[in-house]
Image 1 (spheres, rainbow, N blue to C red):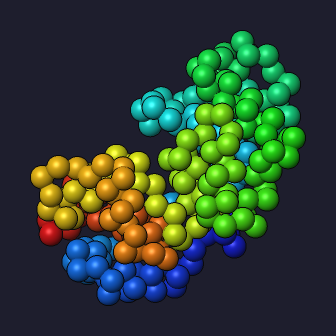
Image 2 (image 1 turned 60 degrees about the horizontal axis):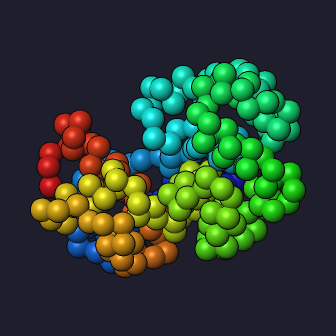
Image 3 (image 1 turned 135 degrees about the vertical axis):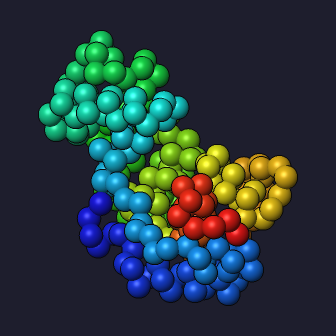
Length: 215
């Protein structure tokens, strides 16, 4: 991510104050959650392809595959992907579906159907829709791309299981919220739903690791 796309510490701090005032449940965790950096990833084609690689595999496996993809492509670019045969891409560790998705992303970028560099000029909804028009890019992938790769403050990936579990814990609910319920719950956190997501992840992880006591 380029520095100008990542939220600043001051922006995150102001958003935390806003969220604490807007929601008592978030106020309780905001008071004890340490300062956290924004989770960042490289914007553009490489960032989106990396998210695809990391889907539905363990972190260790994904990291190993991504390292092979980077080494095999040399430059992680649409052209480098389109130049290789499917069998060569599979040889880098990509499954057949992920080979198709990698090609679809590359073709969309090259053709202009979804110029990843132009997304920064679109609204959150417009950019998400443009990304989801690409085969293999679902809502979670689109939203996490916009959050991590473009630093958007108000994007909330309600389909994220870890985030749903954090919500269940914060709200002291017996059952994890559904994706629809998570999105509905997050409405009160506009225009800082992305910061709320980071706050939930950070606090829940800190409690699990014993860094702070349970709320």
